[in-house]
Length: 439
Image 1 (tube, rainbow, N blue to C red):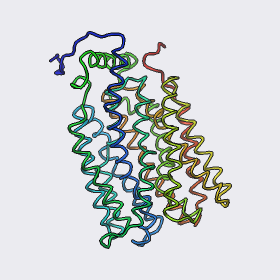
Image 2: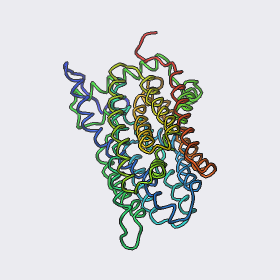
Image 3: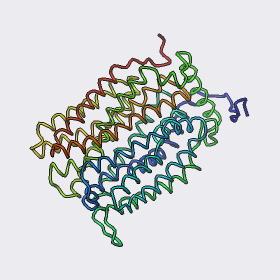
Image 4: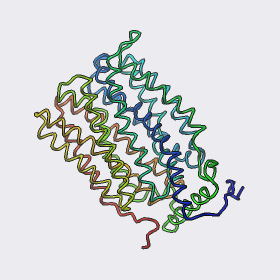
């Protein structure tokens, strides 16, 4: 054991130690991280598919549905920052396992709601259960991947979002059509999709390793190389400036990231929770056809996210790689307003706009890792994500309000487009230097 309490690691390395270590870590961690985020996202957004029948069965309108969806994000922020710090200072695997098991239980409970009040309560509790999962995963990846590999690692994590749609869309289409034991299909959607989270939560405790220095599955030379590289990056960031948590929160660049992410999620989460409803109202297609169509943006997003993350790492550029997908999505929603009465064109713009957006995520989340280190970075991930997630409340409530007030989708499309354009502008206004670059 060394002075910090971590297992001692030998220093002998060969020329291929680094590539071997990077590959081994990627093959070990990324598939599992990808899997658990798929399950997380399916459970989080299955309400969007359930709403194709749920609102009618329970007797509430767009504003009530939008408020219920938004309740998740109001409570999601409560434990976001402390949870991310717990991942940094305590144990990632234990905290992530706790989150997964509790959200699985509450997702199952949602399948038994019978009133608007119970729906609000279920969404409220789900937000508490899931809070800090995403920033915790980002912090966890920074423990294992160098800055030059980080955007690709985050892309693999975020690729679970469109992949979840590829799996969740046809699954939802099938489940909405069943009626077992006198329970409507939308209820089975929640019940059956909550079970995998509980199972994977138990597996997480045994499979994940908190830190490279504790990884017995890494050969000693690879473990030593990885610990050394990550420590060198940490020291390089401290030489630029060692931020306290309070200083990180007050940095103007952090505040710009928060605003940019809030606006991006106002549009993105509004789209995610309303796109089945948008597609059905524009086209008049059946539920099964709508859920099948929603595989298109998922495929676009999966390819775009992986390609954009790879290219961002290859070039070392983050800002344009984050801003361009947002601007492209905003353009599609602007065009959607103009062609909203032409069903083929309108559906095409809706699907393309929803798909283009995904590509911005990996480059965006690589930006704060260039600025901050250790607990300041963990807390800032939580702050950016928690305040940004309030866009999920703002976007969903505003869309429901605008739909009820105007009896049209046009204002909602304009809101989404504007949010994307302003977010892209905020990202391009940032000036952050790579910590290993010389001034």
